[in-house]
Structures are given as C-alpha cells and as structure tokens.
Image (cartoon, rainbow, N blue to C red):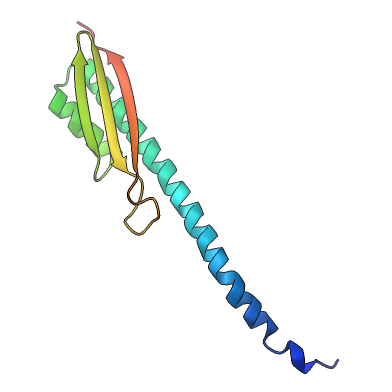
Amino acid sequence: MRRLRGDRGAVTAEIALALPAVVLVLLVVLSVGAAGIAQLRATDGARVAARAVTAGYDDAEAAAQARAVAGEGASVAVVRDGEWVRVTVRRPLGASWTPAAGLRARATAVARVEP
C-alpha cells in the first residue's frame, strides 16, 4: 500500500482544529453539572433549615444547619411571618474558573411553625 505525500500530517491538523471545540463542550457540560449540584444543595439547605425551625430550633441554629448542607459560601436568611417561616439560601454556582463563577443559585422553603 502506497501513501500519498499530501496526506502527511492531516490527522494532526484535524485534531488541532477539533480540540478547542471539544474542550469548550466539556467546559459547558461541567458548568451545567456544577450549576445543577449547586441548585440541589441550596434547595436541600433551605428545606433543612425550615424543618429545623418547625422542630423548635432557633433561627441561628437553623441557619447553621442550612449552611452545613448548602456548602461553602452559602448565605441564609430566616424570616418569620406569624406562624410561617421562610428560609432563603443563596450559594455560588461553581468554582471561580468556570464560566458560571459570578452566578448564584437561590432556593426558598416555607413551613408552618407549630405552636
């Protein structure tokens, strides 16, 4: 089998052209995954804090539990309105190197406080 001299290095050139696109797609997939995980953790943190308040914990302890579940960098707000409590958790979507670095996930849970 005889090789043509004009085909020499063609695979290398094709890989060099396709590699940046593959890296970009991978970065987008990782960012979307990180955003989904951040949203789930914020939601879980808000639910944990709302349940903690209904179980009789004070607002500071409930907020600490929400931060433990939501993860590093989460901010928690506990607002009581009569017999209802609303917990809002905000946390960054991803690491500082991801395209979603400046965005934040937000979740709110509402529960009725038993007398």
